[in-house]
Length: 125
Image (cartoon, rainbow, N blue to C red; front, side):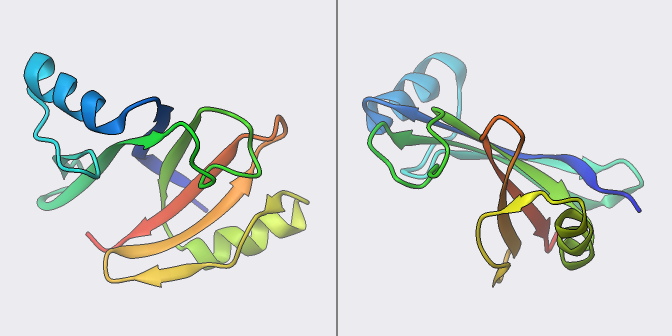
């Protein structure tokens, strides 16, 4: 069973998300919105299919990364999230919440052995 297929996003805390968005727009050419930016790419096994990697700065006081105390969270792209979550449960991995489904994919959060919160995403590319 293939587990992670790539990085879906990089999320990090900062003092001023708006200023960070502007800095990256000005100096590195990011096409930012209040939610960061999306990097579009083509899938290697089928170049007609697009994929996205999200980049998001969050306010330093966000609760979104909890229960992790870290200043970052990585989103990993996966296939068959339900099957993966069942396998992770059997391996005694901490599952933080329930799988949620949106029009752009399914999500769940887990913790690694150092308490880093990880977001798993099965996208609808």
